[in-house]
Every structure is written in C-alpha cells, then in structure tokens.
Length: 571
Image (tube, rainbow, N blue to C red; front, side):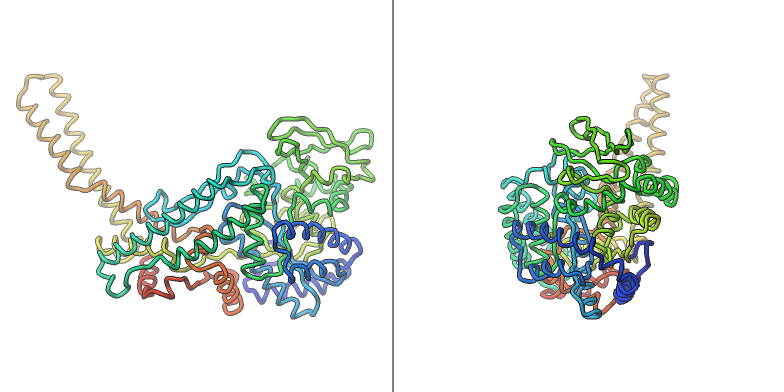
C-alpha cells in the first residue's frame, strides 16, 4: 500500500529506484551546509537516547558518525511510542533498514535510517493506551490489555508503569496462551483431528513469552516515563534482537535541532497559512482525517506547558513582533509568547519546549534533514497530502513517501482457535464458507424471532380479551397454552446458542482483519524470526501491497497445514 503523495510504489525494488532517482535529481539541495549542521545536531540527541536505553551498539555508533558526514543519505520514519505496539510500528523499522541497505549497495555512500519517537504526543489515543490479541471467545474476538493513563497529557510526562502492572499484564498474556492452547486441543479432539495433529504444546510459546518479557522488564528498569518504556522497547528489539543500525531519538528533544526550519516557516507564515488553508480543500469535505479547520491560524508548533499539557498558539503580529497566544489544553493556563520580528523570527529561547504539529513535522524534518524517503503510516496519509502541498508552495523538497501495511498470515494460537471454531460451525451448519454460515445463522435467528413475534401478538390479543372477560376460563387456558408454547419455542430453538455461534462467526472475521500487538508475534513467531520473515518477503516477493505469509512456531512443530489451508478457504 502506498500513499498518493510524491510517488506511488507497488514494489520494494521500485521504491529503491525512486529513492535513487530522487537523490540524483536533488543532490545539490540535499548536501547543503544547513542540512549538514542539522544532522550533526541531531546526532547528539540520538546518542543521548541510545546511551539511556542501553542500545548504543557498535553499528549504531558507526551510523552516528555517518550522520555527521556531508555525503551521507538519510531515510526517515516516525511513530508514537505505543503500548506493546501493533506490527506496523516495527514493520516501519524493517522497511527503513532494508531500504538503507539496498541504497548503500547501489550508491556506494553511507545511508542512515532514522526513527523519530513522537514522545510528546498526547496520551489519549487508544493505541497508546492499549494493545490487542486475537481471542475468539472474547467480546469482539479481541483480548485487550490496558494501560491506565491520565488524559490529555504528553506521553513523556506520564509515569512509567508500576511493577504490579507489569506482573498483571504478563499474567493476562500467560492466561491467554493457556486458554487458547486448551481450547485448540479440545476442538481438535471434538473434531477427530487430535490423532493427525497431536496435542498443542505451549512450552515453546511460553518460552518465547519469557524471552520477550525479559526485554520488557529491562526497559522498565531503565526508563523514567511511559514514553521511554515503549520507546526503549522498540530500540531494544530493533537494535539488539534484530541487530539493525537504526538510530532513534525523541521528538521532544531533537526538534531543538530544527530551530532554523521553524524560523523559516514563521518568516513565511502568510504563505504557509494560505497553503495550509488550500490543502484542506484538496482533501475535500469533511476534512477526511487532515488537520483542523483552524490549523492555518496556528504557529507551526506546540508549546509544552509545565503541567504536561500542550498549548496550540494562535499566530498574530503586534507592532512587527510575532506573537503566539493560547491556553494549555490540560490546565488552562494562558500563554502569550514572542517569536521575534516578522522579518527575523527566532524561537531558540523556546526551542526546548516546542514540538512540531502534524503537518509541520514533515516540513521541518524534510527541510532540515533532507531525507530521500519517508516511511509513513496509513493513519497519517491525509497529513502527508497536506504537507506535500505546503512543501511544494514553500520550495521544500518532498521525498518519496511509502506505507507498508499488509496483513500478516500465520498460525498463532489465537488464529488457530478461530479457524477451528469456524471449521466446526461450518460443519455443523453444512455451510461451504463463512458467508454461507453467517447467512444461515441470521436466517435461523430471524425465523425464530418471527415465530416468537406471532406468539407474542396472539398472547397480547388474549390478554386484551381477558381484560374484558376476566372470568373466562377458556381464555385463561388458551393464554396458558400460548405462554407454554412461547417458552418451548425459546428452549427448543436454542436461540442463545444461535446468537453465540453468530458472535463467534463475527469474531472470526474480526480476527482475520486484526493487526495484533507485537506480543502476538513474539509468542507465536519469535521476534528475531519476525524480522527475518519480513525481510525475506521484501527480497523474494518484492511487493509492498500483498499479504505476508509467516512461518510460526506451531506451523513448524505441528501438523496443522491442512487446518490453515481449509480455514482460509472457509474465510
């Protein structure tokens, strides 16, 4: 999948060619003194992060030196430090790493793959607060693990999880593995498949969980806040388990390196504002996921309040001085901040307390770092469309942008349980696939309700007649008979069972579309193996759009291939 900005890429090799061409066509604009200085400043913030995380490996240190080299190339991606994030967050790192490797081979110069951690984002987003695992018997087919966070607070100002929370989450995941394994073995036995497939042994799954949880606990020991807890986990997996040379840094710190780029936007604020207004029209009405209607009135950055909230600053000019005014979204405190004169704005006195807004993030990083590729996310596609429009109007280079968000197909315990439940339901109903099974269940439930409705109407008529003739014994007997038939209909129709079965079918569909937590991959595939499988897909299949087929622990150790194949056919 690719975003409709800058260029459209269906394949990995096509992306490599596009980045190479972009570099060749824009060499003079990429290797400028400003870009070189910005990268050098960024390297200091990168070093601090990796030292604190404990992931300043030899290859990371080498990339830090490359970042100061005028001739190096930079690739960029970014994401919130989500709680045990879904696979797409880590997949960005894999695509960024492999793309850097291929470009370095093709161009013969150092390529640095940079991952920005948006630790200044608010705590309200559900992906920041929770992660999901497939569980067909749970509501919606999903087991959700929650982190209780204060609302409307920057993630780097939220306390790290308590030790009790870690123990609770681990116990929930252990129970999820145990419940799914027991359910699978029960279903295999009921369906007469146990002899061919054997019992599912959860030992290796539990071992994978222990290995991953050891990383979680090490990150917990090192971190001071919730953002670092998750950011450190990303770096530990990417830099230590996978051995990538990816360089990470926090947005709340590194944007001090981009003062000149924020000043550039302020110096051309009228143009910036008009272009932003136009970009909203490009997306159409309603605003299709882009920035708010008032964005064009705002300074291109947030100001960080002492309370942990953020201030959106409405831009105005007073006696040739640029001023930003606004209230903290958390505590309500009023701010009026000067940014220098209209001709020579300067935010350096505020630099340690600002961070870019959604559209301006791309603008300042693209102007300051001159990356030759940006790996985005599906959720930010609208922002990227708007950012490209503004960048073109201001003469800022806009690199190729790509999103890699396929569905991974593999036999995890949650997926196996769901496929076996589907197989059982289809067999019981004589249905050829999930669509036919759902239609059959809906028809059966509708028929029962139609019969119950007829009985209920007859019952109401009798009650109305009895009000007129309360002593009529025949009417009373008929009412008693109708009530008995109503009860018998509810019992014999197995309505509750039908509803439960329909819910299972709907849950199977939810699981087939679920983008689960990295925990699902850690348990069922192994973290190191996940990276290897993703890289294999990019090298062999070349597609950025097709599903990715992964080999899980259970698909290696159990005879489950037919279950997977037949289950997919039923879907």
